[in-house]
Image (cartoon, rainbow, N blue to C red; front, side, top):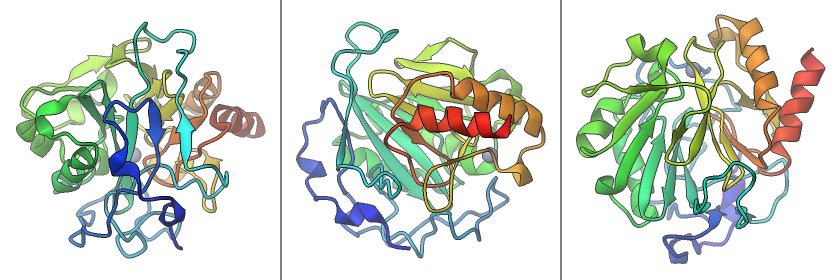
Amino acid sequence: MSQPHLHLPRHGLLLPRRSRRVFLADLGKGALAALTLPVFAACADDDDPSEDTPTSTPMSTSTVPPAPTEGAAATTEGSPAATEGTPAGTSAGSWERVVLGGVSAYVLLRDGEAAVVDTGNPGSAGDIEAALAGLGVGWESVGHVVLTHAHPDHQGSLPEVLELAPDAMAYCGAGDLGAIVSPRPPTTVVMGDQVFGLDVIETPGHTPGHICVLDRAASVLVAGDALTGAEGGGVAGPNERFTPDMDTAWASVGVLGSYDYETVFFGHGDPVTGGASEAVAALFAEQA
Ligand SMILES: [Zn+2]
């Protein structure tokens, strides 16, 4: 399946570093041929045609979001007038999707500082570095690394990333802490905590300590594997094959549907870029 982002203008690199937009333009340049294949059990089917794969994705660093479902414009405005609950002075920043085979990591650059959400399988640091470079920064700008959960396709490159970003703090949900391999102990976060202006939402079920982060300034939810991108577009529930506690996971979907955001990023599947929280609420209502 071709990637809709190929249709977008290639002007991403010209955007200012402190762009207030979630910028969606294509930075890929088709350059990165050496892709990282998942090397061990992931939390999604790597043979699932709905997933991004190295063969179907012409570049490992893909800006967000292709949005096949929404037929959307090439950019999504952040909310210059910060939404309710946004810390004063928090700008929307720029989000970058990093497609790492069957899983995605995400990078947020805001006011010259970067956060990385999830790290892919082991060996993914180079692709994350390329995404940072596309935003005009390097590892020294990474202050925060958030793991949505401890599955190996999300935490796998944490040791590499923390070695490359010596000033970065790592964060995870308490319930997953014991399963995370890290050269520096991650800081555990709970409901309502903030990391780099991102609100932590506890979403157990897929794993006991699964968390999502909500960027109110950009109206973006990073859902990890609490939700998945539906094949063909849209929002789907957690993958039951890899979710040991589906009842709790669905309750977490209900929690996610109670917030307000336009865009949702998934660990697996293409982002939804318009009306995302309404779609999540509708998904939960269907399930209930
Ligand atoms: Zn997972």
